[in-house]
Amino acid sequence: MNFFWVANFNLKFGKTNKILLMPDLFNYLLTGKFATEKSIASTTQLFDPRSQNWNQNILKLFELDSSLLPEIVSEGNVLGRIKKEYGLGDIPVVNVCSHDTASAIVSVPKTEGSLFISSGTWSLVGVELTSPILTTESFSYGFTNEVGKDGVITFLKNCTGLWIIEELRRSFERRGKAYSFDDIRTMVEKEKENLPLIDTESTEFATESDMHKTLTEYLAYHHETREWTDGQLFKIVYESLAETYRKAIELLEELTHKVYKRIYVIGGGARASYFNQMIADRTGKEVLTGSTEGTAVGNIVVQLLSQGKINEDTELKDIMTNIADTKYYYPQLS
Image (cartoon, rainbow, N blue to C red):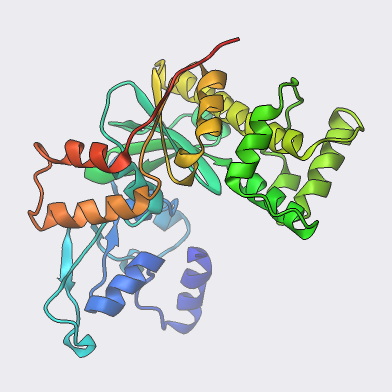
């Protein structure tokens, strides 16, 4: 959402009452009440991660009327009840961690010395901190301070993820080759040759395209012109993504002045055993896989906690561990 367009529109026409982010809009339609939950508010660049409220200096700088922004509430807040007009009964509406990554991180068992990778179409590499890192270096490295459950700072970097794999699959499908992920795993595991890497953050890989053509042209320009097998192309992308994660983790450890021993992988990528082994090998760290539906799990957990259905101190970690069906991958350094 372009807040400043809305603010300018309001100055001209005076018709804006409240600016709502998408989760807030749905909650308003359900209850008729305005509020913004912290995790989604923290993604707006109008939020102060230290005070965990709207940043009044930024609002004043851009002449954005603070009355346009809803009150910020914590996850677990019972916003209200579903309107009677829907005929659904007396159902509470709970503010969950409205940012999907924040909800997904709720599904990670809390273990000291661990990083997380939310591995999906896009990937988020980060760690939970007690206070934000607001330095020139963290800004230049592309890290952000978002907010998660209980006000924890999720310090993370957004990276290209399995989007490239998904687009490459579609490219092959258009060529009459419909590969399942099991097919891809088998092909990748057969490839023993050391292959070149690509920069997965390069702009040509960020948009919808004929990824087979984009990838082979990139390889021809940066490495060599040759015939690549389908398995080699998939392996190049997976190895390159793992290398992107390694570099992001290296920067993160530099910024936090701490070395982390293990990585929790959550999201759809958690089911890709061959890829998770690559991550372990590239980073030299133990990899544990969490829930493939972490966002949904985190959403449900916050609702259950708010209603007193589960006990955070005695039950939450066991529930998360059982749901995740955790698998372990250890570095196999060559």
